[in-house]
Length: 231
Image 1 (cartoon, helix red, strand yellow):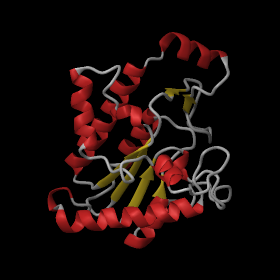
Image 2 (cartoon, rainbow, N blue to C red):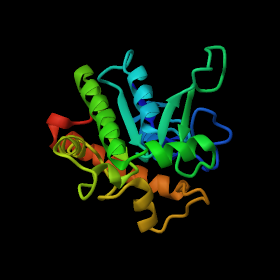
Image 3 (cartoon, one colour):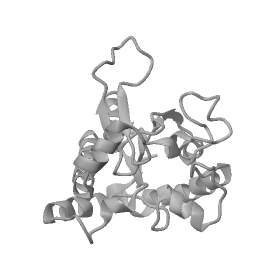
């Protein structure tokens, strides 16, 4: 039995004390600590700085070979990150073929994308479709999952929304796990936990988040048999 995690730096464990010595993800993150509680082998498939398309690909690539005895923990990242596949990449290279454009980037490609091509509507529509595809595929294969999110904009219905987007939002929200109504980062800040200069909650926050998620998983096991996380 395995617990497989997917996401960006907040799942990878950037800035935690062991992250520079563990190339495949920190063992101090809340998913890693949850795996210890559940007595499962831990595999981190998160990638620092990734966008949601890259996260989706990692999830889909790990479904073959996984079973209903495994648990997928997926942390969707900010919706305004744009992933693209590097056409110059070849299988002999060690680096990932994916590259990600972020609003903080200060290069010509990022400036062109965010000034001419980017829109909040596209972000919502595409990322919500990524979420639905992941949920539906995991359900089809009978693989239990816990999904969290970093970006409240994914569920915002004040602007840049259509009936189709609302339909996708309702579907995703009903299966999404949050931290007492917040993202992990916002929840950590609300509790006053220390974070790094790059906004990453540190060890105390991850320990507390793991304790919280343990109660969530245990509750699902006992009172929600239709959607239970099988452990």
